[in-house]
Image 1 (tube, rainbow, N blue to C red):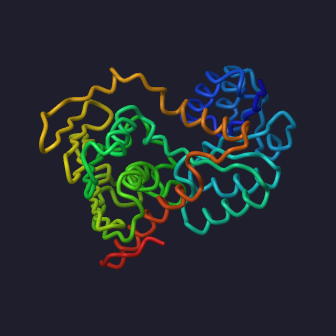
Image 2 (image 1 turned 180 degrees about the horizontal axis):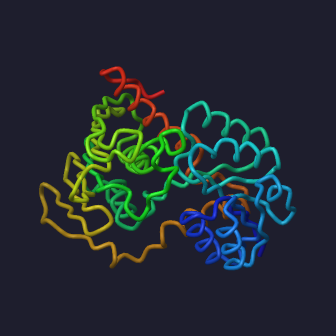
Length: 329
């Protein structure tokens, strides 16, 4: 069996999670190199994964053992790292958000296409057991044609996930890019292509960040689909729940946990994700990326889908500034 040599760029919590799940894929993949500017994080990751340490991404990309890179750095660095990787003829798995602007996404897609390398984006929410099962139910037609969704994901600040770069719009993109780009991607998986976004909100509670801590989005989709998203950091009660309405039934979910399904003509039933035999989401996305490279087949979450979610975030922020709905483009 061929083995894909992976280089992990970014040894923070997400980078280590990706490296751990990549290790579980051996022998089809192996973490052979790690990179971080934080000397302690780099040394720790190199020891844990028995990988070569590099403080400079250019040095990692020059390593012949690396055939593909996993980018797990703050969002503002994704484009530059992807372009470097493509130039070095390395395949790219890029964590969400793909980038902080549509223009950067377009550059990433073009660079990878020109270099003939794969580009996959880590929109893992669609692979988390509860959400993967909801998608299966929708796609198999149990609730008919989905026409509307509502999702609330509002925390009480960053808590243990607080990092200095997350507090700054220039590096994180704010709460939409850093967190709820997941929910926007999932809405697209259910309702299709987004058309326009109307966004309102502001900074009400969390003064440690330099961006809005609560945003409310109304989104129009193709075929008259509609969605609503409440996203932010401003709730004393951490809330993650949502609904999917279809022509023949409805799903109510409570984030990662149990969810309820009911058809108009059937009994209500509860689904417990812990009882589902599903591959762990991060491992699944990496496995699919590795398989796409080794078998030279299309990736399952292409750059175009990462770009789509970024375009929704940008449309939301344009709408917040203009006070009117803005097209997703």
